[in-house]
Image (cartoon, rainbow, N blue to C red; front, top):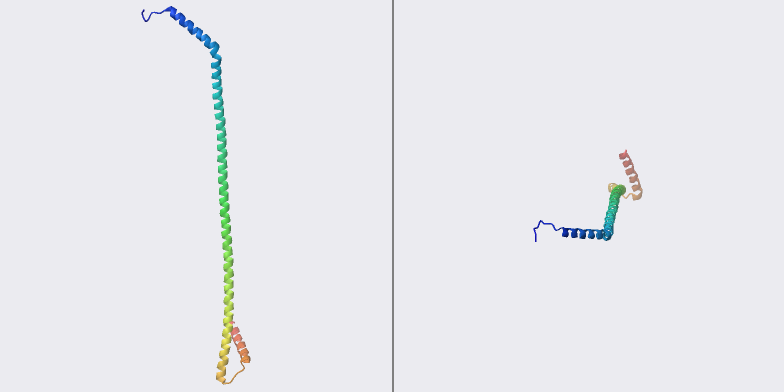
Length: 167
């Protein structure tokens, strides 16, 4: 055995010859399959990148459409809310108007009822006054007076008295 730094030219020759044969065989039989494999891998990666780009474009498009639809739905919802508010205001306004009409009608009816009650009370008072005048007159004159005839006379006197007081 020799020194580690000694070169054995026979070993170098056979090593180079083996490497050259291996390289030629590899190139002859392995270049096409390796190149085809690399080409297929490159095509696969390229198609994946293209697919990802298309998917990204579609996702962006769908996102934009979704945002557009959301904003449109929000504007429609706002319009519906505004319309509802306007309808509520109209209904409240109509209800107030109807309440005013009913209130006004009730007041008119109450005034009418008061007038009727007043007229009835005045007529009843007139009748009572007429009866009292007749009774008082009977007592004063101490004789019986014709009630119907005297009642008409007193009614006309009271009516003239009312006209005199109203003027």
